[in-house]
Image (cartoon, rainbow, N blue to C red; front, top):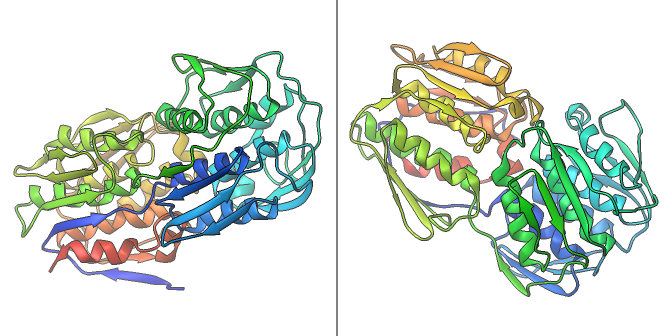
Length: 434
């Protein structure tokens, strides 16, 4: 465990990086493979703290998950609910794993106890629980109402009426319910109350459900209709690279190019024009700021030949990658305003508060609202800032980009990147020019 990592000021950035597998796709694919009929070979699986949480939970629940290669796993599906009927499940601080497992366990006719790290006990789950209770799920709070830990009992599931779930806090609640409903074996429907945040993540969920044999019909992102019948293995599925992780390297290319420093052309490999991930739109945001973006089938390249310019942007569709934009704003002419980021407050930490605090350390002037953040870049970045990361992997990765201003930066608790990208700092250093 490292207490901190010191990054010296960089003269530029150039090169290419092969991305680890997408966290969003990995966690969904592992669960659906576990619930499906037949064996599934998953290639490109992300190996990180979050995926370990999901793999450990599935094994506790009686699912055979065998590693067969560097990033490949064979998952023997249960063909329905989990075979183990009594278990304690530890979910760490993985929001997707927690919300998806709770929903699937509610349909599994057993007795389960779910808990995580202290921060998970502060992340709301009442919208998911309320939705599942509508169809007869037996879920009780073991601590504070509205938050884990939870106790899940057999319940009396009846999906005859549509499930109504709020969509304005986290799309993970809707993902959990959508993935669980096919376990009933009957036609079902879901209605979203309020505006859905992070809709592209629901698109990922639906895409993967269809690959596992469950094709839904939807009216926009407000109503979803699922046919009867459960999941079937596609046989083999390749997981694409992580688009959220791509944002840091693409930003590095744009920043270095805009400053006219050595290098300034960075390519990420593993995600491209055909990606099913919403965070590929981060490249569009960079282009609006002045970067030059080139896309291939499975790669994206970023550079810039002119100074970056601040923008006013709705980040509802790219909430994770929007954090990277907040740091890119340090290198832009004029202010940058990020809107539609209320979901930041219920992530690994309160990201709006955390970003504001740490951006001020390097000299930025901040405007902060309930669902927005405005970044005024400083005339000159402060060197030697010690960035706190709040046990949040994205805080650590975002603020590594400060070093591209030619100033040293210290990242506290850099090991938090193990949540999604254990090799991040090695890959980042590999692009830096001194």
